[in-house]
Image 1: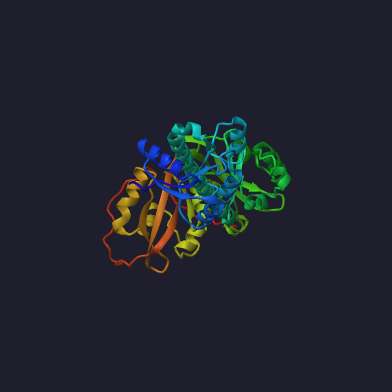
Image 2 (image 1 turned 45 degrees about the vertical axis):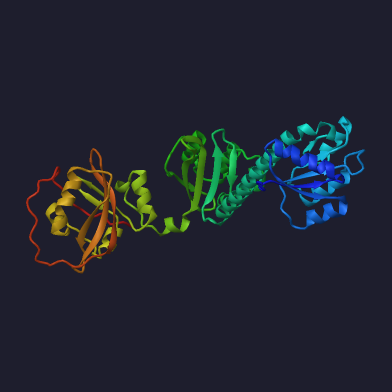
Length: 404
């Protein structure tokens, strides 16, 4: 006999037990019936750690449903389905027992309906178990998300496409100086109006935030200057479920210390947002090249260990700083700019070679980009073969703008 289904059966009459067992077997519900008589035996079975799939409770006095046994079953095994088997049908009593937690009420006079009732009860119990597992997993993920949100150094704000705030963290409140009462309605427009009073010139960020556009990647929204002299950098990206965009996620970072420590850049070094962001994020050197001049941040001199005025003033002099084996890479990048970065070995002030990574974009007037120094490479021979002829798109003259 298949014993996957284990049923605890409270019943005083042995012939009724045999009748129910035979009925279930004829209905292709083979199971293991554990028969107990009396409340004490029923109580001992429930608290004994036995594993059951369903409880059948008959009325020992054969006159009313055993509500005491039902209450005990609900207390000991709250997730198990319970089917009551009263002696006769009584609609009022059946409703009362269902309210007390019974899964089904099947009178013995209609015991032929017991097998379908067992199937329904077992199916419902299975569905409820799956729901409990899903809810437990959801609670675990929510707890994990909350832990991550509250331990990150960034302020986080998530909104749906209707402008309703879904979630935020305490760091966001502290960075932007937002009190709890402003967040209570979970309304983005209310928060944006508050930020408008907190920051000196937040219009770019506010217009982007209100637009709620679809940005698949992380997009910088600019810098917010607070009235207490702090600089907050804002980013946004779309929140997707599958292929559907359902909202946006904003993140905020306090970059006051970083901004104050950066060298000021000449006006000519106004870069596209992505390259400027790269320059601000680390040891990046912005540069700007036209037909007439090369403008480099003073950090370029420091990165290469050069004294002021030591940068070349014409293209041959610039090429003399590039390792001969890398010259073709530089020339190709100038003639055919592309988004991918490229690497060049450059001569430092002490005569050694250092590896640098370059990004550039070409506009109508020339080139803009950044470069950064990478880990040192093995020095090359000083007597390397001189570079070959190269005719550039422009005739370059180079000058260094010293920053104050």
